[in-house]
Image (cartoon, rainbow, N blue to C red):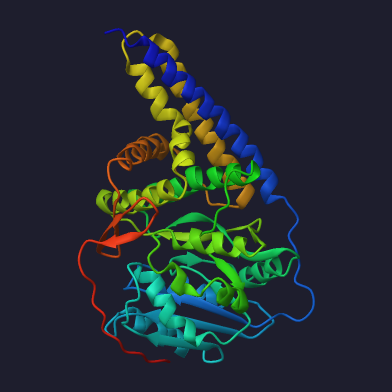
Length: 392
């Protein structure tokens, strides 16, 4: 069968992907140069919520960056675990000794309120919130000392009901898998979000940071409203917008620690990300096929009859990826990547993207779930409901 038509189609899609990448590179530079608001007047009091689960690589170093904020207002950090034997507890005690002047609270509560274990942890932690502004941030995030001031300044702007943050990859070690994970964030996630928001096609909200007032949390039904959602961060953003405000995105990025040490771990967590996005925005996710320019061009070039044109398009697609990577590094002040990994990264991403349509199964923190059409998590096995609480 003559498949030259398929080759032509794939090469056209690849060229469209190249154009997409170059436009995204330009928009990223403009976004990063946008003026940032400055917090005026008295800084409001802030509670930072840090749900924890297990001993993650660099956990102490990640959490410590939140203890080193140059913020002028009162700050409380609430850490939460659901297992009294969780090794993360020792990290919290270590932080308490290192920063005795900070208010660090620890909540240990095993109660399970829904299928989303992170949200259940947040429900248990919410009773400890003591301040007017709440900042929720995942445990694997790394921030600079001015992070909190910049987030609160953004939240204080008229019409803003919430704040979320873009993030970039930070390899936790020199291994190839951690670098591939960081590349996925920096050359796929970042440009896609910048493009989507610039065109008004995306309204994101990320677990990297979600900031809102304590009153707004009450108005959207508390964390209880999201106890069964796979994409809890997106759902919180939608609920905040439904109250009539915007979820703003500051012009800086924060670090996401990439800890993968093998292909299995990298594949599993990227599959969870992809299936989450697929459930949140199925049409947009399917349309993101065009962003996989290099693999599309490579497949098109390998079809009999494609000739040298296919290889030329593949080479051009790879060159565009390098340009995009360089532009993003410059725009957001990121460390240079090992560019030789880009073709490997793009092929893995395309394979994961394709496999994400096969089923709705996801794995999170060692627990298996099925995801139904509305994004609700269904546990593959029953969950315990033991309860207990303590504070530091």
